[in-house]
Image (cartoon, rainbow, N blue to C red):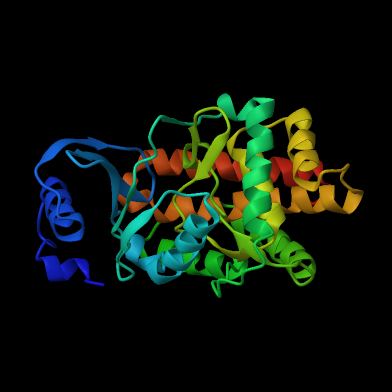
Length: 303
């Protein structure tokens, strides 16, 4: 498979890159339309040609220090094989440029939509398929190892952390050491924010963008959906009951909440790594995560 640099496009504008990638990968030009899509990590474009609709993703600035694209490819390929992501035409493992089918007749979900009972059931079904696939991708998602990587990036970029960060970090470290040694790891998405869910029709749900995927505690995915969609107790119970097909145990509910702590801890640091590229909006993102983390620590009697 060719590397993107073989196309001679490294210094082109995004529009020029999209045209060249389509020509080389799919032999399809000219374009009918190019529309910029959302995304925090990549720059993605919906592309229409006379032959079909595609999504082309280009790597975001600074992501080369944070994301192993070869690992992403392994997880993305598994998702395609399981039918929970669209067809993958091309993936550049060196930098993450990829070309996929655009999901026709679909909508990208938001937090409000994620509260609907039928959507919660579909989310649980997708996670069941992924988590029960009995596949080891060989891609580890080690929370504290990634956190240390993010801390190094933050330090190197001279971005400040919080005055009580050392104390909070110590609490999370102790908690993670006791909890993470006993988990059963399975393939996980690890970043199932609302905008990564695409609904086709009324009953087919896709999960996209696999940059952070890897072997992890399945509770992470469930807890992350709860955080991103701002679920309350009712929605949390529905999600867990749909996923387990039974009432959850006290230990499972505790694991669910521990993962919420780990998630907000890690994504607080992720937000801080993005400050040099995205400015105040990432400061605000990190601060909101951090405040929620401390609130839950207090609620659980850990602060």
